[in-house]
Length: 133
Image 1 (tube, rainbow, N blue to C red):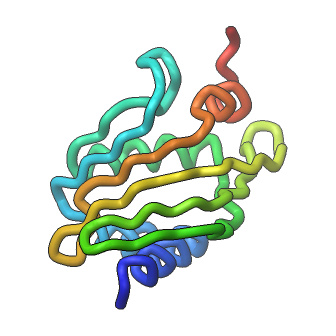
Image 2: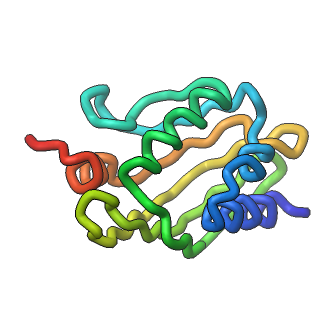
């Protein structure tokens, strides 16, 4: 299985809410990087699978992911750069939002060891977490 095929399988598991199986593709020492100032909910560096699982659980309290549409991807020996749109429902309001995401996944021994994500964290904080500025 290519790295891109691995990620597509992970996306399918996420869409079906089978997070236990999805997390098996991540190394136990994975590092997740979500840009943004510290006052933006969710922004930060999450070190270790448990920290990522905790972050994901908090995110699922405010967002219900409906579908992921992969747009473009590029793979080399150790990395995949992927662009996709995540369509999710804001649980509190029922609003459907589309989040365009660009991410770099670094692999080692067929597991994701680093996942760097770029998306509009401020928009997500405002619409899903209710952040007021």
